[in-house]
Amino acid sequence: MKITAKDIHLSYGAREVLKGVDISGNSREFVGLIGPNGSGKSTLLKCIYRILKPDAGQIFLEDTPLQSMSYKTSARRMAVVAQHNHYNFDFSVEEIVLMGRTPHKKALERDNKKDYDIARQCLERVGMADFASRSFSTLSGGEQQRVILARALAQQTPCLILDEPTNHLDITHQLQLMEIIKALDVTVISAIHDLNIAAMFCDRIFALKDGCIVGEGTPGELFTPEFIRQVYQVEAEVVRDSRGQMHILFMDHC
Ligand code: ADP
Ligand code: MG
Image 1 (tube, rainbow, N blue to C red):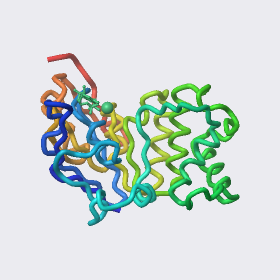
Image 2: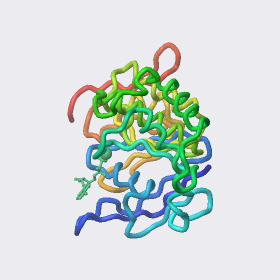
Image 3: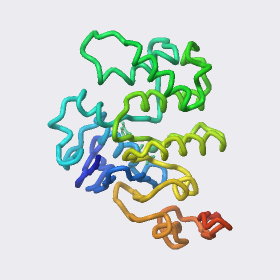
């Protein structure tokens, strides 16, 4: 399912943070969103997952404007792994994952065996099956992040939006989580902090700086020393390893 954001503008008070942003993710494409801290990545994703309403511009799932869809309908098409997940009540891990089933259910319909099976499979997928009865609030940041991914998987949507999903994870779990997402074969738009992780997993990358898109392309097209200097003010060298995988080596601040 294709996601298109067209000419998105958003201001916090008088300050315009998104200044006419266009991005898109084609069906089953893994799209990365990179850019320095404060460039507007989370704000753009919040517009896409409907926490914020853009001041101007529109977002489409295929050809349907998101605004014309009920929240339930869009939640059947798009799951979200946001950056911060705080709950006012203490839920178990299993309960959190079962929340992913809500858009598929009628009001007050109870979870059935299929929902529990899906929740268990999704927890297994992220390596958290042993934690099902644990209280979510007692988990480490990285464990919580994997549970939130399991909840998004349980939603069984053709689109997935992620905001720096690997932030709290060690390298093993970073790679594991990105591999799980890649294997889903759904449309992904993910803010990614680490350019090397972005280079490994993304089909296409958009770079955001000061609320404007300043580059778009495959990792090979986009990640040149000139581009990295322009966006991050850092000197870098781009090399290929024996398998042809690209790596960005950072030298120093220019
Ligand atoms: P990124 O995710 O790329 O780090 P954000 O979208 O979080 O960037 O933030 C973009 C800019 O908007 C930053 O300067 C940030 O301080 C500001 N900002 C984010 N959220 C709010 C808010 N709720 N109110 C005011 N300013 C905000
Ligand atoms: Mg952010």
